[in-house]
Image (cartoon, rainbow over all chains, first blue to last red; front, side):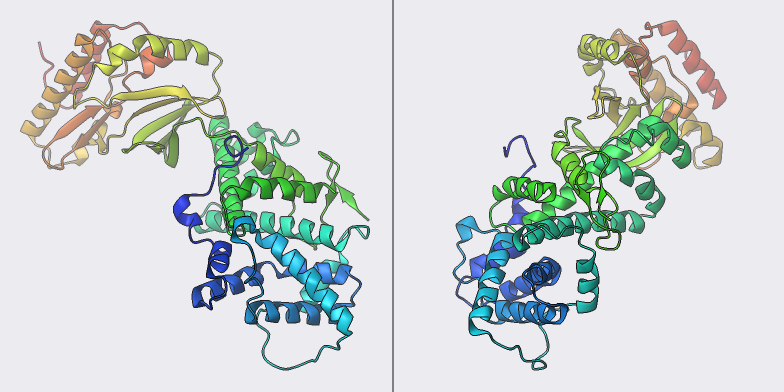
Length: 246
Length: 217
């Protein structure tokens, strides 16, 4: 699969991905790994919130629990027993929050409000607004977590691509070609787009091709940040595709 | 109300629940199915556009240097072009004159479009020589000498340029006057034109007269 699927991320980049840094730190307290973990949590907190909500907690309780979960993750080196050889941040985070909620229920603990500042910025109102729009009630918390994780990765890759085009003064090009990222769009022929952009058909085809490759590269880079081994990237993508197919 | 992708039938994220306004499954599937890059060049920037295609500044994926990569608009005769290139390649490889932007490669992009890569030559067009006051009479004669020598090298290899024109010549003055012919290979390989030394000589003489230099005998 590795030969035919996604190219492995560049070795130099992979050596310093955030999740591999976290795993490499192991039991030791390491400022760089703590920062890497905080950054990952900051990025991927919404799937955790959706998971907690889908477990049946009300919005306020879910926000508190999510915040508490990340506090523990960041303060207590939750991942010190993670096996670097089989590490994917998504699966560890999902297992960790499941374990955390199970403990919370056993102790029937009432969460205290206030206290120290939360470790990550969690916009509870925004999160709940998004959660209420989740289309399916029959998804298990785990499936919802995975679906949200996959969506987040796609959103981030697309947003990065847009930002790069904006910075290069090519927003119009991006907007006109974005629809082709899901495949050739029979509803919008290349000829129409080339007329709008005042480019030749051939130039539009090349631009679409470049955009697809850029999107793929951006996606791979983000996924690579969450796995500890380049060989896991392909498998993770296949997993995410399944998560979006339910 | 749930919305479904008309293409794959899966649930779409509800508006407002995700900034993604494309079907996530189709998006990921398309990224997954993108074929590996078979075009051995990485495009850097477009530098010219014409009726027949767009020319980009590009870098080889493997190796160093910069090429001018012309990607042609849809053509139905790409197999003929590639066959011609395979046949003429040894002859083109013999032309290594400094006054010619050498033909590097002809092939197909991942989209199946024909490309032609030549060495990139920086500089200004010979057609704008009157704007470059630093080029005196001797400079013009030197340009004529270099271009005449370049055309002779092409003919010595049994080939012809067939597109000699002031807009197809780049001039640089860094480290002395240097002139180079662009577009070598396009007419013979891409268009299938027969080599004609007489046509090249006439075009060269016309071009040199245009810069005030008598054509060589």
